[in-house]
Image (cartoon, rainbow, N blue to C red; front, side):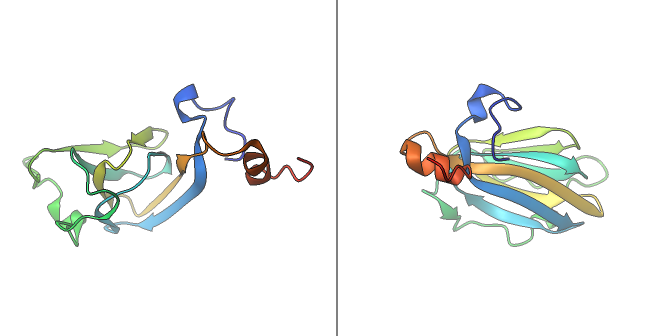
Length: 139
């Protein structure tokens, strides 16, 4: 994830302040929260996402679902949906972008889910800090 400029679309060029490596077991997930803009590509396994408009200003939402996996769609396809939210399933090989402070919750659907990505922008970082972040000690 160090030099992503030739691999990812230009939109993601500066989204690399914090690298993300995610490894999760089935039925584990994260309740509603928000943070800086991020991207995540699924390398293996399926992950459910609930995304809703609005901002909490970062961090955990006061209306957080403690167990988002308990809100998966039933056999008829009906899911527990908080007001103003959307639901999708990320498949292996798909990249998902989460905008700045967009609230989201996740649930790992496969026995093992592996994903990688990055969070936060480096667009305003001084060049020397960016070079150090990329491992360029000569700068």
